[in-house]
Length: 199
Image 1: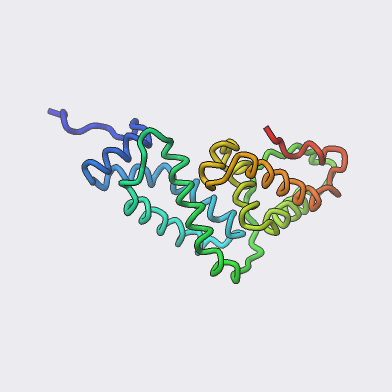
Image 2 (image 1 turned 60 degrees about the vertical axis):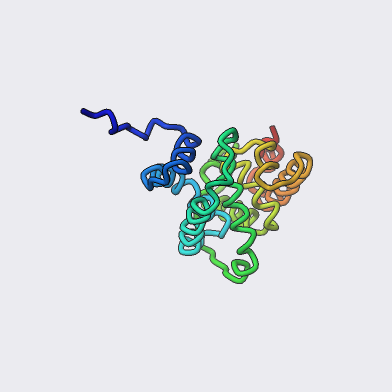
């Protein structure tokens, strides 16, 4: 009989967390890890300007915090938002130590909503300029920008993650896009005002 061999891969993130809280079985948190580790690693990687080793460290620390703080999870809210709140707070708490580390390693920014014509400029140089613009942002502006354009969070969700108002989030995103646009405007003066969407 297979009454107790349930397939947990079809459970929602919230259901997995509730079961993990109630039963404490590792299989539930392992399933969450499988779902979220690539995305969270990419988030830390971008926030750390391509420092893969430190990104891996923060990822492991993050899931330890998820386990430690499991009782704080509210099943009525999205797990996605909750775990990114912890991730953003983890980055901010380590920022003083991380600010002394510097890397020029290239990394993908494939989800940034760019509108450009490859015939207008050299793609590699454009990526370098774009990356430079992102890396020069302050922590709060960088978090808002990456959560919006790389992770696809809404302004409301970012406000919840960063514990700020929606107006503050919009202001930070606007400032970030203006600063980044200064780095890339030479590549496409015509399309430059439309590179980033503010919806």
